[in-house]
Image: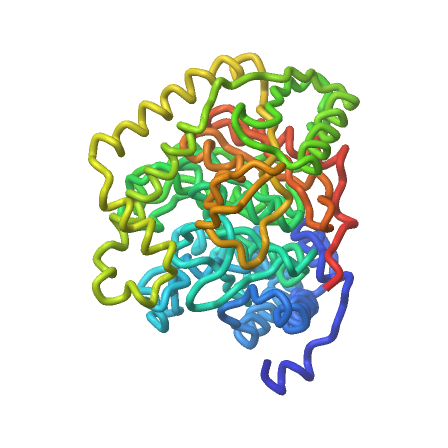
Length: 483
């Protein structure tokens, strides 16, 4: 931080954890200035980041200048936008024109983007102010956050553990008070996994709800852009800005779905909840199992109607997702192998090599697996409003977790270390179903656990209603990591 900024920044713990909704209310009544909020989160970034390593780029001076402009807008009452003056952390994977976008890889170190991701542009156009960019593993390839370029990102609740991934830096910055809101992407749980590990709210919208155009292909069907926040209401503020058809993304949805402002819908009474403790094939850590059942019991006590269900899914679901992911990564990055393979994460190289070996028939066969998954889930969601599961099978993985670890176990049973501990990736295969991760408690190491709530296809609005209701009966806002 520059000497000028050091002299301007004053610590204000109250503002580190304010929600965007509360901040905007205070901006409007004049009891808080966007400049004071920005100073507070900048101070928090500089205090906390040395121990967690979640930041890749800083834009402090520009952010403070933009915050001053936002303050003037509130004073004058003119042209106040939906997210005016709110600090925003943007994932380093997401292009911002003129800013280095390396994908956590030495291949693109120092290379500026020539465009801005549409969802990010919408947040900026709504008045959000980017003060930092956040870490990601190379090519966002896995569920934890360490890369050849940026190293290891650590969990603020217990730095022996991972921040999750691939939006790991984003999860840390929200949880540790380093930003007010953040955004991420989710191809196998990359919003929901770090949200669970860091104890925040993460939302994977229905496919097409938020324009993507993150990759060279517009037709990839498992990637989602979405909000990472400290409250469901803040996620709604972000989604309402980010969603809607965009001319650059042919898969973006035309319908103008907007999440209603908070109101009388914060009730679980009469909500029909299908509960799967393990999706039929996951090994679940006892702390996670206990916290998930406690959450479901709270729903029942609040008037929800619970049905414990059997999905009939097996580990063929995992094979389908891994096959799809390997094929996608190989398609996007195989041409870098001759020049860069020895500077890449070795596991990324392995995924690419495996993907190059898949036949077209094997990759296409994953669509039949996805179809069979929906045949089992469809009647369950026809008679229930939502499906509830743990977000992860364990509270968190170790910070230096190895994707190929042959000795990785849960409850003494060997589990594939790459991603078969995350109950998130099945709902990327069923990408039309929106999904939340909300905090559900703590594991034995002091790391949060998450509850995954999955909605009917394209019914983001109803899922927000249920998520708001759960947040009301299981409040989390008073819990913060001691960093």
